Length: 502
Ligand code: PHE
Ligand code: NA
Image: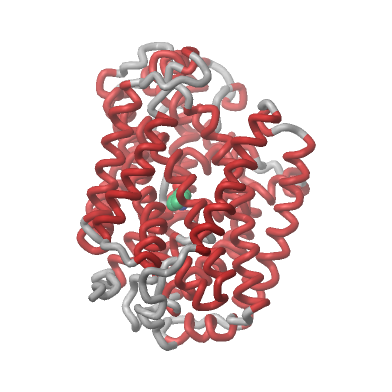
């Protein structure tokens, strides 16, 4: 007989693991740059609006679907909306497949840089070191030459993740979060406090927080806020849904949701403070203003600008190790959750034992990720796939899911009762209003604006044919994969793991 569905040992294990998933690379290397580029201090307004009107409502929706219908994304959504619902679930699984492949690459870079921090390997040319000595981007644009400095940490990250997932939900995922999260909090707090005491820190904070209220009139700022919130909270692509399917029958739903959202936001605001205090120091050292610095966003910030700063700082080794160590812990606990979405879907549908699923699927994805990113090919594809997966994939998934579940199947009343049944505070019409009206309307508008923009000017100035293949091609593969997985026959009983009554 099939084993019963795994359960967290308690509310604490769930909350910790959900925070582990939410707090990821996005909090540390994405948020500070996004906030800075989109109005600085004024960005907090669209950010909080997006959090309250879309982030938390969808987080609750994910929780309610996963717990009430007690399944992975394809199984739970099938229970609400039949085969079409199952298809949405598999689309979410496919988004996770793509994210898993590149997320591991960034994680592997962070792991290398953690080690390099101890001898400041990059010397005094951090930028040249990253693209040249480390990634060897110049070697060629498409080869299968392995770059050992990337390959080795990439393999280690995959092995670690596979080992954790193979040990199961409680002994693997929950145990890993129990170790990683306290370490992350302590390490990160030390890092931020140290950054605040650097000379010039205040100038960095001024650069970040000086509000540019004119930015609020710019729709792209609002789009950036909504886009970031979805990625950051890990909502609308199966993660929170899957994690809450492992909760016990009698569970408080809403309070843990707020705890997770609050922890995630605190972490990223703290990250922005730490990062900009450090940038303030760097500008101070060079005798320039913070806004004259280059490389303040994305990959460049973490892997070029930060290493350069660390090299100039007294005790830089320690600072660098804390920064990259935090990235590794935050990223690893998120990667685990991404893979769990894929595994749960496959285990539920095909009835294969957990370990078999972990080794075959984890192994398969590891190979793809290693071929793409362990060679000198990787970096170009990374930001393209990241952009399409987030701004097209996740946003479409959220729209289709809310419209199908709340408008076509009208499951809103049932889900709202389920959310309120055992919770410290109840949700009602307000929640339903945001999740069924505000979310699809705002996201629909965003999606149209994003697509129009993508057709007007080629993303990142890349070649159009390349973007067609790497960007739209990725979305096409997600859709085709979702259709194929939905069409393949169930090999386990879709009725097992009976839904929890409300
Ligand atoms: N929420 C995570 C972050 O902020 C990102 C993440 C993406 C987590 C995809 C899981 C899956 O980095
Ligand atoms: Na996050």
